[in-house]
Each structure stands twice: as structure tokens, then as C-alpha cells.
Length: 200
Ligand code: 5GP
Image 1 (cartoon, helix red, strand yellow):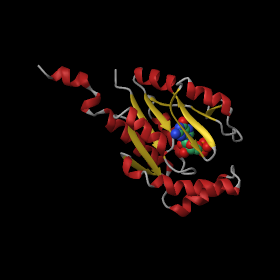
Image 2 (cartoon, rainbow, N blue to C red):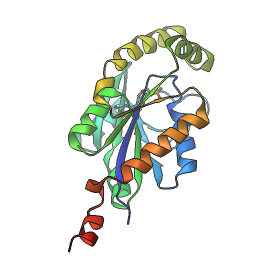
Image 3 (cartoon, rainbow, N blue to C red):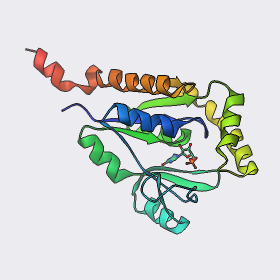
Image 4 (tube, protein in one colour):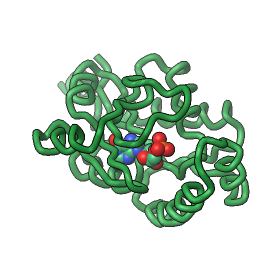
């Protein structure tokens, strides 16, 4: 069996992480997405258990207390966290589990799983990012402002990441992501069976 792997995908709001990861999943069947829990309100078209598990603050805090989350943060006034069960079982099945999470969560994952792979999705430039965020039309102007400020903070974490992917053109960007997955799968440290086979 190929080794299971954790891949963290971060990047500022509006950069197109979601679309990129969806495309990656259609290119590589071993890639699965971890569905986070959040207290943020669903956006139009979002359903419980698909984009997120939508919780109220009390439910979320109870998940924290009972250690059901691998990591969690408060981001722009809402809680977000990664449920532990699905991640662990998928890794055990040899899947590549993608966590689409922000930078603080990413660092927490890296601490807990030193062999996780951290990928940062970048916009072609900052003006493009602002345009995409406004064009999305799902957030109020003050929320967009907060998210742009937050983006500037998130870029400071870039040095902690392993790879960057510029999401200029979706097909090209998802090809790059697929190549990262393929290459990481070939690490000797992830393939002890290969070592055993050739060591006599
Ligand atoms: P949004 O509200 O736009 O869906 O997500 C806001 C931010 O929270 C994004 O950067 C997203 O990647 C991040 N996020 C989503 N789920 C989680 C999670 O479980 N943990 C952490 N740390 N961040 C998350």
C-alpha cells in the first residue's frame, strides 16, 4: 500500500484554494479532503457536511473540550477546526488527506505531523486577489476589508511552507499540485518497504 500523507493547503481568502483542491481530487483519486467544523454561517449553496460541518459556538467548544479537533483557530470572529477522526482513518488507509486551513492551523499540524507537506497558494498579484474577493460577492465590504488585512498577515508565514503554487490559471496550478503530491509520495522516508526490499 502506498503511504498515507497529510497535505496542508493554505492561502488568502479568494485565492481559489477550494477550486484548486477540487480539481486535484479529480486528477488523483487517492486525494481526499478533510471537512472542517466552523461556527461561520453557511454561504449560499453550502451544505452541512460538504464544505463544512456547521456548528454553533457551544457545539464547537464542546468539540474542543472533548479533544475531537486536531487543531482549531478563531479566524475573523469564527471558530474553525479539523475533526480528528476522519483524518486519522484516511491516513491509515493510505490516502492523501488535504487540510484546507489557515496559517496558524498549518503550523500546529506541522508540529504534530512533522512529515506533513505544507503548500501555500498565491495569487498572481495583490490587485488580482482584491478583485477576486470583491467579485465573489459573498461577503459584506467590511468583511472583505478584514480578509484583505488578514491576507497580508498570512503572507508572513510563507517561509514556514514547503511549496508555493501560483493560481494564475487553474489547470496549470492543479498540475503543479499533482506533481507535488506525486513527488512527495516518492520520498524514501515515506516508503520503508522499498528500503526493506533492496537491503539484503
Ligand atoms: P472561509 O470562511 O473562507 O471558508 O475560511 C476562512 C479561512 O479559514 C480559510 O483560510 C480556510 O482555509 C480556513 N479554515 C477552514 N477550515 C479550517 C480549519 O479547520 N482549521 C483552520 N486552522 N483553518 C481553517
